[in-house]
Image (cartoon, rainbow over all chains, first blue to last red; front, side, top):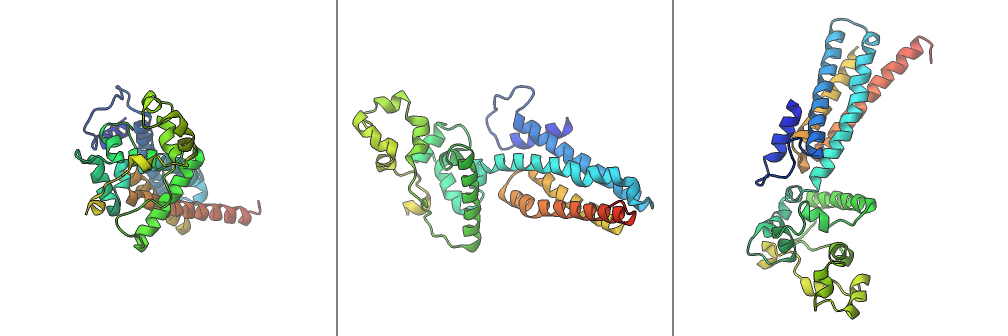
Length: 223
Length: 62
């Protein structure tokens, strides 16, 4: 329970607004807490094995402890690590962690910004993981592709082969906008989306950003 | 004996990096988890597996 409380405190530290998580916490907090508890148990198991080996016991006599401490528990810990790490990398703070993205994240938080991303962020049209939600395709392959693109971004950052202001590598696909908006009444009744134009929007022939740009207004782009 | 202690030390180091990730996620510790912690844990398992195979061969069970 201590580990779960620790995880709870760690995840709550960055949040200004209480979340509707109830007395038992969220799955993410429990996963984090269990992961921390398992790492501690694993370290204790390894410590016990080390102690017994130091006392002169043959490795054969501590085989069980070594099996649990070196193979069984680490496999579970890695699973929890990926669970926690991949979820964490989807947060806005993770995207803003690279200094080149700082101005994009500042734009999201700027109450005066009228960029498309800022409007979505400020009004909580997307409740969480706003960068990831708009910049990944839907489904399992979309998630994998987004992660691979993220690795590519790290390589560009390390090599320094990028220029500011950052520009999107490929045209932004309408399907990411339409996944949420296409069937909403506001979209269907809008004068800007007449019925005869919708096939063009659905096929991507006309980009949503033709009318709804700019998507971001980082300070480099405003200068 | 020495090999087992090396395996334990490597695994412990890998686990500390996992603990860092589990407490707080950012790019640094996620990269450390993927690029350092996992290889350390894998090397520890390989050392352990190698020692077990060696012991079994010595006893002519393998």
